[in-house]
Image 1 (tube, rainbow, N blue to C red):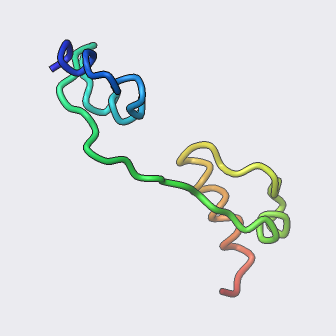
Image 2 (image 1 turned 90 degrees about the vertical axis):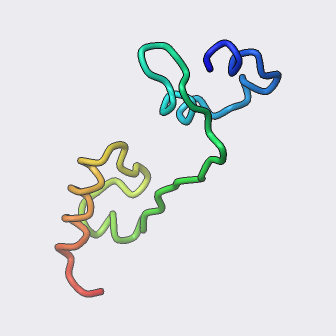
Length: 77
């Protein structure tokens, strides 16, 4: 559906990440029907207590896991 998809008047407004999910070897095989708003919220106070930079959240899955371990090591709820 590559040519058809790119001819859509709103194609440039589609989420590039979602279009990429439906793309294989430069050809578009699917388009997003709806997009989510995935976000990550972190507790700056706990980050600081765990020795992490409270102003800089994790940027990849490995950091999410590592930071979670440090915060979890604080104990409590």
